[in-house]
Length: 320
Image (tube, rainbow, N blue to C red):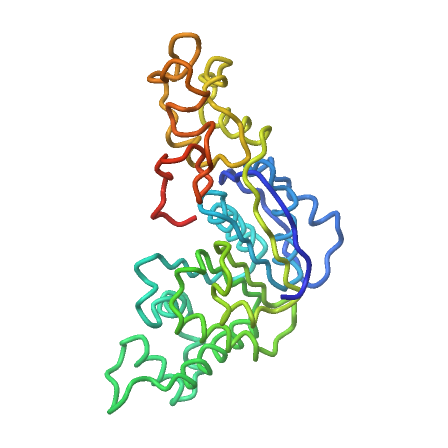
């Protein structure tokens, strides 16, 4: 991919969104920096938010890569709101584990957001192929022509970018069905529009080859953003945001701040009272390390970053 790599840490929470000016073309740094992470309840994600905001204003792509629970989806939800505030049309595709084996399921979600006026620009062979692929029309002797479907996606994106700025958001790319990924990648590689008219934001997990059919066609510049686990200070801010006055020194002693700790484990597993003898969490065995009662603390980190070995990762089947 083209562009740089940005290392970041912290966890976003969607907050109140300020009104943003409509941006077109190249913008100065001050305009990008005006978007404060703190204004949206984001902790430790300032550079990430600014990088995504720049892509929204100038065009290009940003690929946010991280383990489950690090906040990719939350970042993309904020970016969706930022794009709309900037006057851009947003097309969002959010596949799940169960969609991976359904050909063109991602494309069906995308097509449902396209206005009828854009569909009327499709030549008849492309319109028919897309309708067959999306099971809106019965095939006439054979399944949809893959090339005609991909050309139809390109035509739709070209039509939309011709009438305004567009932001395409793909969350959980690892679950996007291959047929949809190939169609979008084909269209993006062959799209001839002004750079500022199209921005693409992608969230995915770190694994070789995920969604290569799509990522190989992303419009440049492409910014590769690697999310690191939450830093100590950002973890504290997040827990204070969630727990308020209940965030006390005794509770703090029951949570070991470690870089391998998944943020969702800390925010979803903590019980409200969280005060036991000596300030340890209820149910902590004598001599056990801090955090043992809630599955985070000493011991080998699980593959998903959840702390103690054997602790069930929160939201293992959920979108990351």
